[in-house]
Image (cartoon, rainbow, N blue to C red; front, side, top):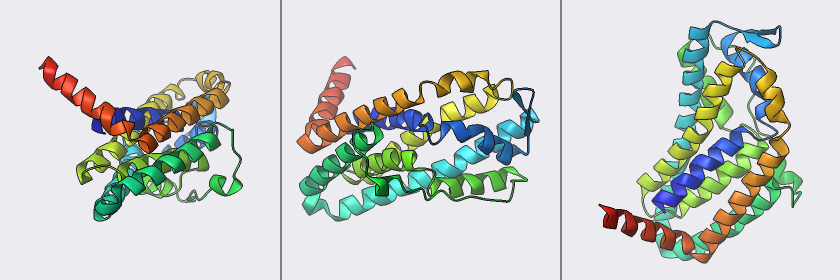
Length: 237
C-alpha cells in the first residue's frame, strides 16, 4: 500500500487545501496568524513573521494528522483478525466520502463543521504551532471527508509506520500549497481570485480520486498494485 497510498495521500492533501471551504478563507487565516492586514489588494505583513509562523502552523497541523494516522493504524493492527472486513468497510466509506465531495451525495451530517476558532492571535512560532494543532482537530467539512478517507486507508495498513507515512504525506500535500499561497498573497490577491473560479471543479476531482481509491481498497487491488510497483522497483535496481 505504501507507494500508491502515499501518492493518493499527497494528492488528497493538495486538493483538500483547494477545497471551497478552506481556500477562500486563507487570507483570514494568514492575517490572524501573522497579525497582518489586507491593503491595496495584498496582505501587508513582515515576511520573516509570515515564513516562521506559517511553518509553525504547518508543523502544528502535521503533528495532529500524523498522530491520527498512527492511532488509526494502531487500532487496525489490534483488529488484525478482521483485516479483510476493515478494508471492505473502509473502501465503502471512502467511496461514500468521495461521492459527497464530488457533489453526487448530500448528507448534511457529513458537512458538520467542528473547526475550532481562536480569538487570540499568535505572538510566536510556538503559539502558531498550537493554533495549527487546534485547527487540525476539525479544520473544515471538506478536509474532514478527505482526511477521514486517508485515516481509513491508514487503519487498513499493514504496519504502524505506514499509517504515519500516509498522514505525513497528506500533511505535506496540504503544507506545500499553504506555504506557497501564503507568500503569493503577500504580493497580490489576484492569484487567489483566479483560483477561486476553479474550486468547484477541484472539489469534484478530489471526490473522483477518493471514489477510485475506495474501489481499490474495497476490491483488494490496492495491495496488488503496491506489490507490483515494489517488484518493478526492485527489478529496476
